[in-house]
Amino acid sequence: MSWFKKNSKKIETLIPVVDTIQEQIEAPDTSIFCPESIKSDGLKDVRNNPQNYIEINIIKRIRIVDTFFIKSNIRQFHYKDRPYDIDEEKIYLLPTKSGFFMPTSFYYENNFFSISFKQTNKGITGKAMSLLYDPNLYIDLFSGNEAKYNLFIVMLLIISVSGYFVGLYFLLKDVIGI
Image 1 (cartoon, one colour):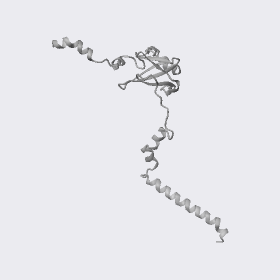
Image 2: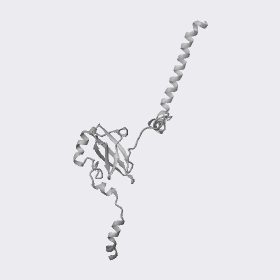
Image 3: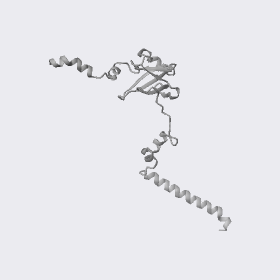
Image 4: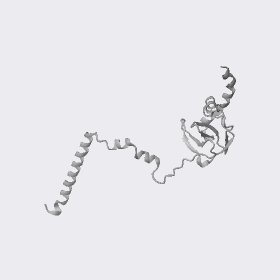
């Protein structure tokens, strides 16, 4: 027990300081690492006027996303004493629960340029590709377990083909002389 008391200071210095503990004690949608971020008392104005703010999402190395808001007239903000530039071409409008669109930008920690989500595929889009390869689409289109509707379609085809030949007979009856 006495060894632990003597070496407790050494043990505390060996334990790395992790950001997650500090993020748990801060209010949601705020950040203590960005001096330009909106504090918890200004979040009500962000919800009422989202066009005046930009939502910043910093993706950390430990796969936690730090989300906070800054005013839209700021062109550069600081996160952990490092400057990050805001590129207007990489700001995306995402819908909110209130029906408004929120300007949003994404960054990796220690990467000073925002992430771009531009479509680089020159062919079919990702949304169309996901619709094409969705197995539920094929099940709905080609469901063979509805025998009642299949029988109805076959009978309707037989009636329409026989009606076509009857009409063709009456059309060509006078021409051929039958």
